[in-house]
Every structure is written in C-alpha cells, then in structure tokens.
Length: 238
Image 1 (cartoon, one colour):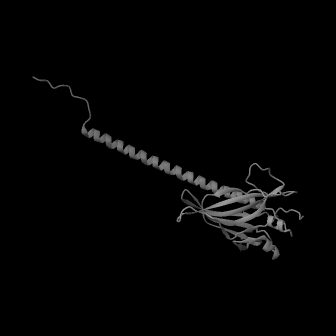
Image 2: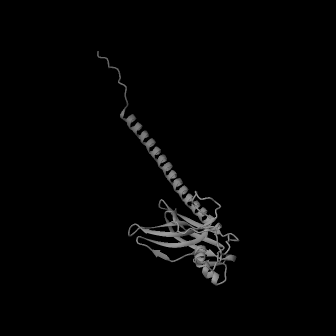
Image 3: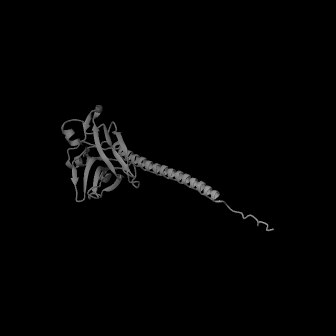
C-alpha cells in the first residue's frame, strides 16, 4: 500500500488572483492620493506666487504715490523733472512695444542699498512692455523703472542709468485710471502741466490700476487703488 506524500505548501490560483487584485486596488488608491496631493501643492504654489506678485505691485505703487514729490516751477528742466503724467501713447522699438502707464517724481526707491529718508528724489516710470516671442504669442509684462533724478542741493551732471524691476512677468488687459479731488473720474490720461495751465489741481487724488495677472497659465484679477497724500511733498522754487 502506497501512502500519499506530504502536502506541499503554496497558494492556489484563486488566492494569487485575489492578492493581485488587492495590490492593484492599493496602488490605484495610492496613486490617486499622490496625484491629489501634487495637484493641491501645485495650486498652492501658484496661488502663493500670484499673491506675492500682487503684494509687490501694491507695495511699489503705494510707496511711489505715497511719497510723490511735486512743485510748480517755471523752469523747463524742473517742470520735466517734477511732471506727473500717465497713459502716454505707445512707443514701438525694434523687437518690443512699450506703453507708459505712469511717470512721476518720488522719494521712494526699491534699492535696499539707498538710505531713507534721503535728500534726493527719483524719477519712476511704470511701463507695459510687449515682447513678441512668436507670431501667435505676445507676452506683456509690467515694468518699473527708477533713476535718481536730483540730489539736494546739487544735481548730478550726468544722468544716471535706469534701474529696472519687472513687477509682473505677464499681464493682460492692464489699464490705469485717474481720479481728481471729489472722486470725479478724470479718465485714462493725466498731464500735470496741462492741468497747471488750466488752473486745476496738478496731481490726482487717486490712481487705480486694473487688469489680469497670469501665473503658470492661470489668470487672476488685479484691482489696486492708491490714494495720494492730502498734501504732496513740495520743494521750494529755485
């Protein structure tokens, strides 16, 4: 009589298939959770970059307008140095187009190396720069330019170079509006010298910048309102 040998240990086909099925469910669930975590992390990163860009823009514009310097003067060079203008016509360069949004004299500066307060003032210009990378892609950026315009009591003999800061890498539909005292809408252009000749207030009471900031392909609305100081800093006529 032949006795059956010992039963070999192992898994049946059903057990193997069941284990594979369970492992597949675990992998699918893990991938779904990981994908969701990565998506949320990317969204948070984009939102943080967008908030930082808007905060920098608000801070720069608020400091410039809050520290505006203006004086009425009959001298041509002083008039140009102190002029407050906005909404100028576009200027076409070789590979890009620029439109001036705002140009003013201010005591504010973005250079951390300069002392504040100082005995000088800076000429600051905000421009929209449109660079045509391809025929279909036109990227518009918001740029702030700063140059030391004068030092009290002497002016530099040679004009210093412009220092440029890109406040927003990509913007769309960016517009600027000026509001006179009393809240009246003065439109998208401003010229302090024209207003002087018309015997009206040369500086606006409020400046509003609106548009869209694009970060990583996502669009975020921008609406910044800045009030000018009730009494602008003045300098004696020389």
